Amino acid sequence: MTLHIRDLLDPSTAIGAAVIAAIIVVVVLIAMFIVRRIARRIEAHLSDVTGLQFASRFTQGVFVVAGIVAYAHLIPELRSIGTALLAGVSLVSIVVGLAAQSTLGNLISGIALVLYRPLHVGSVLQVSISSGFIVGKVQAIGLGYTSLRDGRGQEVIVPNSVMATSVIIRLADDTPLPPAIQPPPPIPPEPAAVAAD
Image (cartoon, rainbow, N blue to C red; front, side, top):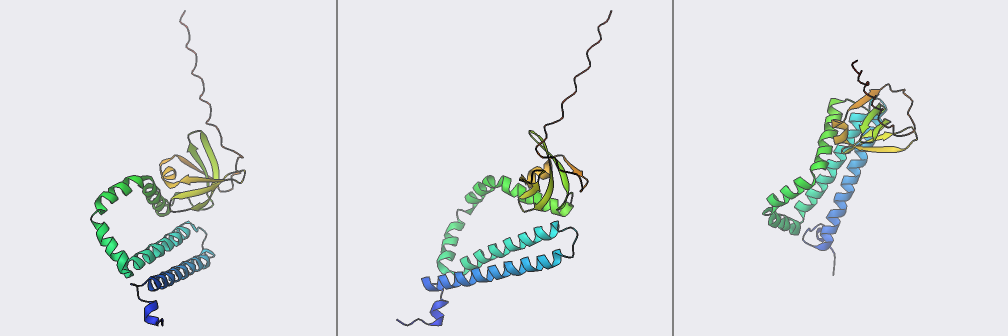
């Protein structure tokens, strides 16, 4: 059996599908590498890299999704499966929408944090949590989570939906970080009622 170049790129054969998958993976990895490289070069000239980091991660995610869609479109078997699944898409979209509600909320909150810029990488924040509050320095703002570093050097991962809806006090960037989660301040006792004579 002789193997021709056209057989290697024929999506209807297993070898062709594997070769096309390998080509798409290589192209996506190269595109992601270029995006990271450009972001690093631009980063050196910026004082606030929050938006750049977010855009870089988002662009890399778009390349991955585009690679998956391109592969599914090029392989006939996947195209036919996609057509068959289209009938059940409405039910699946409802289920996925309900299941991914918090994830999508984190994503939209992440976009809002980057666009409205209430905080940036390097900001020192006091974030209210159920057991008190935590003070930390922003390390990164991702698509779904914001990473803080506390006074003990531990990384604290906060969902972006919490960052968007919590009361956050932005402290001076040179504020020293306390070593742990701080309990809420005590509520002062109410003054005693004065007895009438």
